[in-house]
Amino acid sequence: MDEKQIREDFKLRLAGVEDGTYCFSVCCDKEFFELAEISEIQDGKLDLRIEMVRNDKLITISMHFEGEVVMTCDRCLLPVNLPMDFDSHLVVKLVPEVEEGANEDDDDMWVMDENAYEVDLFHYAYETIMLALPHRVVHEDDPDGNPTCDPAVMDVLNNLSSTSKEKEPDPRWDALKNLKLED
Ligand SMILES: [Zn+2]
Image (cartoon, rainbow, N blue to C red; front, top):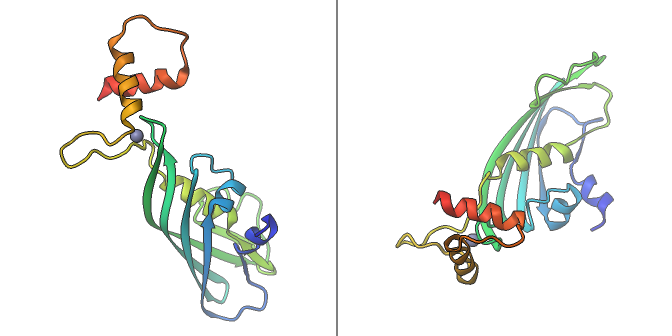
């Protein structure tokens, strides 16, 4: 799929759409994450179900994201698969004239011109996914409480934290060491 086609998937037509409920389904996969420049996500796939309810000048858009994303472990820097399942809601109000600054206060309530041809959810989907990502990502411990991170990397980390002499500092390793000390 090319970039234009991916972006088209997030555009819901408004012009000439009668009152009622409409359902759409969009796939947020690696191409989407790259296009949206979500560098935190290496890979994965989120199915996005969109329900649009139109009631005259009021449009309610409910989105349900479900799937899995692959991020980088903060401890061993190897990929971690994270299941994701979250919702987001957006209300669009159609008005004869959009006042300046009408869309500055509320991210989940948009004011649009009643003659708008479509509503574009690409950026909204991107922001919703970003908000749902965890701040810290690590491989989960096994049932015995042992880390399941890459053992080779963990060995290096253990050696690093037991030697007092530092070599050329690499910010990545420094960050890892700090995490290790916190544990
Ligand atoms: Zn790890």
